[in-house]
Length: 320
Ligand SMILES: Nc1ncnc2c1ncn2[C@@H]1O[C@H](COP(=O)(O)OP(=O)(O)O)[C@@H](O)[C@H]1O
Ligand SMILES: C[C@@](O)(CCOP(=O)(O)O)CC(=O)O
Image (cartoon, rainbow, N blue to C red; front, side, top):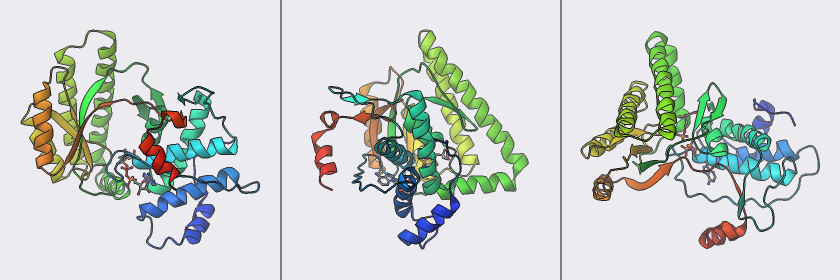
C-alpha cells in the first residue's frame, strides 16, 4: 500500500458536506468524526463497506497539550488497518498485549498523520510519531529516530485547565515567523541546538552514572526552552504561575504541547523528597490546577486483549 503524505482534498470536501461541518476548521469534535470517516473510506472504500462498531474512550484531557488527537488518530489508524487486513493483528493466544513490527508501525503512523492533518490543520507529525513508537524520539523535519536508550525521568504533569486550540496556536507561530523571519529564525535555531544538547545529556545519563550535574543541565534547558516558547507567543499567565510556584520549591517547569494554557511538566530530581512533591502538588491544586506525578517515555500503540484492560474501562467500551 502506498504511504500517504497528503490529504485527498476532494474526499475531505465531500465528507465535510456529508457531516454538515459549518463552522470552518475549529469544530474539533466534528474533525474527529471527519478523520474517522476519512481513514475508514480510504482503507475500505474500494470494496463493499463493512459495518463496524468503533468505541473510543480516553483518559487524556482533550485540547490540553497532551496530544489527545494524536492518541486518537494512532489508535484509529491501528484498529482500522487491522480490521481491513492491511496489517496483521499481532496479539497471539495467551498474550495480554502485543506490538506491531516496524513496517506496520510506519503504516500506522502514516495513516495517523492523515487523521492529525484533519484535526490539527498543519501538524508536524511529532505527536503521532510519539503515540506510535512511544519512548523518546529525535524528530527533525519529519525524520523520526527513536532514541535507543533513555533514562527514566519523573515529572509532575499539571493541567492549568486553560482551554486553547492547537490549530490557532500553531498558525500564530507561523504568522510570527512570516512577519519577523530574521528575528524568529535564530530562536528556532536555538531551539534546535537546545534539543541536540538535551539529547546528548539524555544519552550520557544512560551510559555513565547519573549525577546531579545531569539534572542541573536539564533544568537549565527547561528554563531556556520555556523562554523560547514565550518569545514564540505560546506562553500564558497560567503557565507563568506554574513555573513560579514550582521554582519556589526549587523545581523547573515548561509548557507542553502547543502551549497557550493546557499542560506543563515539572522535572523531579531523584533526590526530590516526597514531602516536597506533595506540597508542590498541593500548591498547584490551590491555583485551581490538576496535577499528577508520572514519568516520561511510556510505550507506544499496542493491541490489548480484553484481559489486560481494566474492568471499568471495558464496561465503558461495551456500553456503546
Ligand atoms: N477520545 C477521543 N474521542 C474522540 N476524539 C478525540 C478523542 N481524543 C481526542 N480527540 C480529538 O482530538 C481533539 C483535541 O485535539 P487538540 O485540540 O489538538 O488537543 P490535544 O491534541 O493537545 O489534546 C478533540 O477535539 C477531538 O477532535
Ligand atoms: C505544538 C505541536 O508540536 C504539538 C501540539 O500538540 P498538542 O495538540 O498541543 O498536544 C504542534 C505540531 O507538532 O504540529
